[in-house]
Image (cartoon, rainbow, N blue to C red; front, side, top):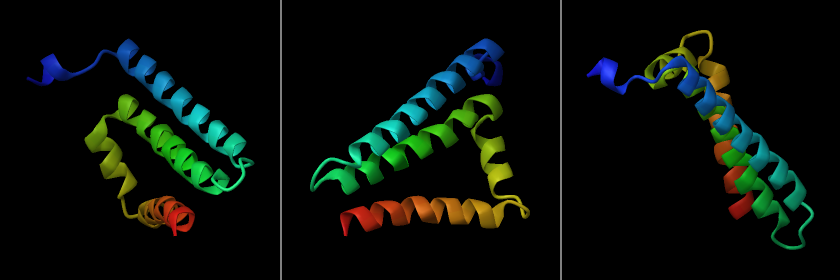
Length: 97
């Protein structure tokens, strides 16, 4: 089962590049939409958050999901992970409330 579901190295790199490019594009689009009247801040928050999630998710292709989560929640990285996730949530909360 593990061999049938694992991706080859070339496929992993292509997935990483595609997901990272989408993340950068969403973040850039969010920055451009910041200047739209009335809805600009909400659009910025949504696209910026989606861009960050896609960029972080792109590393899942290189490491694999479980290894990524284990590394994110190691003792030395726990505070940084919590702060990052909290900031993503607070960005959305500040835009919608």
